[in-house]
Length: 88
Image (cartoon, rainbow, N blue to C red; front, side, top):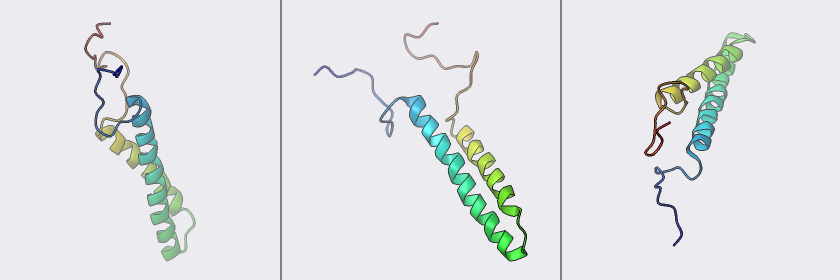
């Protein structure tokens, strides 16, 4: 009754780019928190003060890498996917 004919992918409640961006942010922040805590724990063991920063940076990079592997980031340029009716 007046609904849209487009079907959404499972688990996507809003705009696909918006939920993809939220997922990328979650991966990156989760990596920073998890690996930062691991680095903090290693800092405690070795009485250092800098390994948590290394862990946080590695976590951010790892989170972004996972997002790229899950194809959650968008590439610009010629390789953009075209949907039905999008011939531009």
